[in-house]
Amino acid sequence: MTDRSGAAEVITPVDGQQLAMALHAASTAHRATLISGGGTKIGWGRTPGSVDVVISTSKLDGVTHRYGDLTATLGAGATLAAVNRELARHHQWLPLDSAFDGATIGGLLATNDSGPLRHRYGTPRDRVLGVTLAMTDGRLVKAGGTVVKNVAGYDLARLVSGSYGTLAAIETATFKLAPLPAASGSLRVRYADRAAFCRAAAALSESRLDLTTLDFHAAFPAGDEAVWHLLVRVASSPAATEAQLAAAKAIMDDGTEPIRGGQEEALWRDQVRAPWEGAGATVRLSWRPADLANVLSLIESVHQRLHVPVVLTGRVAVGAGALRIDASPPAQVAAIEHLRSSPLVGHVVALRADPLVKESIDVWGPMPDAVRLMHAIKRKLDPAGILNAGRGPI
Image (cartoon, rainbow, N blue to C red):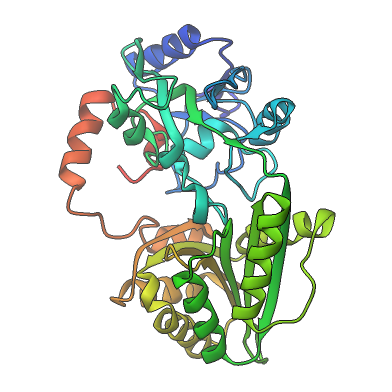
């Protein structure tokens, strides 16, 4: 139910017990419920038929830093930016990145959101050690531990990562941290020829260089030639950083000086945010790293067939990225269907899309073989089916 104005009720718990009680009450009354942190991904997923309750985690923002163990337990509502400011006091950080300034720990883990830092540090799922979850039956459940060697209950922590809030509400999450590097430098090289771009990307991926990031940015503007960029970051000791950057420059066949300081931070901020500029659709997809050249041909075919500008950014050695489609809703639908028909890419998910697009296709795409198991888990943990108001993949 909603109030007389038609607006959803907003509940802001101050601790885990209140969070669990709010979920239990919503489940008992069969009220469709959203869990919201910073609200940066509130438009992701299917369009809900109705939302009765919004539970905000904004006051669950505590930080417990065990700097001797290189771990921290973080409240779901704590923002990544605030967390890293606190961790920096002991020269440590949580090496994750997000396109959104207000991204919270709970939101990052629930969506398994990642960016260029995934090359070295992995995704939130890779770094989480344990969680405290509020269940729809009113219980608080702890899984995993607070130190790296403790793996009890580890699978449950991984299970909620990427569940998009469909199974339980995250109260806290414990992560393994990393020392802040003493030095950093980046390279951004533009290629006029796709073949040369792909050769350099493959050589960097296959090298023994200890790169912090290895990313690319491929833009197919309307009525213009495609633009190919490789982006590399090295963050280590001063001597190691210089040596690795010099070796990367030689592979990239580029003579420009490394980018540092504020310009370097701006470079990676722009790279992370590139898929979210404008008002077009943002589509997540994955591929085999060895197929990058063929995937770029596929993206170019979308651009040429539909005559729409597209931008693909991604992780060279991982085989994952995001495509921005700056086009009308019918063209967005056609592009997504074209991608889903290709064996070159998988997990084609429309993270951001016009409501008309969401009416035409399932934003999550075909479900994996494990969908029956996931639905069984969903029925066990959320028997009333209230969580995420039908927006999630299950």
